[in-house]
Amino acid sequence: MATSSPPRTANRWQVGRLVERRVETPTAQTLVLEVPDWPGHLPGQHVDLRLTAPDGYQAARSYSIAGPVVNGPGGPRIEVTVQRVHDGEVSPYLIDVFGDGDPVEVRGPLGGWFIWRPEETAPVQLVAGGSGIVPLMAMIRARRATGSKAPFRLIYSVRTPGDVIYADELRRRVRDDFGLDIAYVYTREAPEGWRGEPHRIGLADVNTHGWPPDLEPLTYVCGPTAFVETVADLLVGWGHPSRRVKTERFGPTG
Amino acid sequence: MGIVSPGFQGRPRTQEPALPPGQYLTEDFPVLSAGPTPRVSLDTWEFVIAAENGSEHRWSWQELMALPQETPLVDIHCVTRWSKLGTTWQGVSLDTLLANVDTGAHFALAYSYGGYTTNLPLDDLRGGRAWVVHTFDGAPLHAEHGGPARLLVPHLYFWKSAKWVRGLRLKTMDEPGFWETAGYHDYGDPWREQRYQGD
Image 1 (cartoon, rainbow over the protein chains, first blue to last red):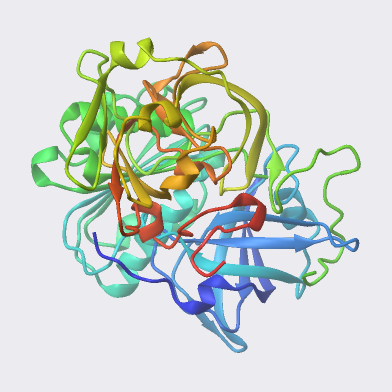
Image 2: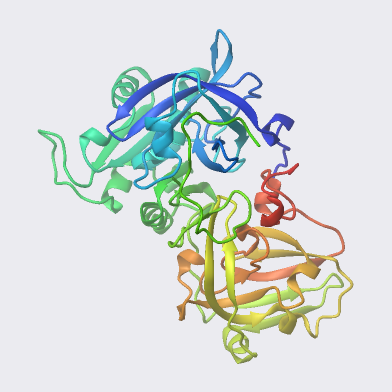
């Protein structure tokens, strides 16, 4: 396994500022943060954001980075997409209170495992459950930004059509990004005219819309624990070697 | 103290018990792993301690269960910031497993079914501070949480408590494991907030 030390700046907290906010769904928003000393990152990495109350109390949480660095007038910008956690401590603040120009402490990039390197040419299969799409979207965006020809397939499981994060962009990308296929699984309510019933992801979804094991794809699965357990077991049972199946599960971070 | 976040109060905290810095309390038992959950049969399961001189000590499942059992009641702390207090386990102390191992090594690399590794100073596995556990909260340890058996080293961040543990390789030199190679701290003391390299 290759050893790479994270850049020094990854290890210290620096101050970022909110410069833009985009509403993605009724419960998810993308926050664009200007981070002057951002050292760059790979798709799939995350940041820690830390809040401080007037009495000095601090709360920090990890958020996946949603796409490549954007160069703004005040320096590099990164995007994170925050899903509201019911009864959460941090996500409701970021969605409801955090204002334009407000500071937040940022540390990163973090995580050297759940990453896709754009120089990789192997087929990629991405399996997202809910807001597990965020680090996978970073890979889809990086593929486009670097001109990668690696064939990508995304299977995206959501409760209802209204829960699809990045819905417009995904529609556009599947039309414009040659070699990217997307399949949706709806667990509660399917869109009008959809063939099939709402259901939880199963083997039929995975082997209809994923890559077969003999193509030796790299697989990234991200979502809630039960979802990731199910999908990873299906993939391994189908013959994908465990080593090529990378997973990221969320716990109750708020 | 960091930059004050306008309008941020945080949760009410007067009644919270003492937690390591940066941690919050959870009642759940979240799962974090880097890949699919290995399924290990008890018929073929074994635990192996390999000393630096090449000698090996092996226990089958039945042999492990026949050793003196302990029931640690401990707090656990994950580097992703959740802590869980008062968890109950059953297993065998590493003091018991290391008792007849002749070694001068200072480090151990724990390795798992599925390929995971993590490194610890050997002293941190001694003195009643580490176990190979197979039971959580009175029931067999679920595969998601590392069953049939995992390491339990509650005084370090929980990634050091290797799931699906298969053995220890004792070493005279420190050799970073899976997350340690990916930028996490070599030691991982939650009370000193040793999360990443350089902390």
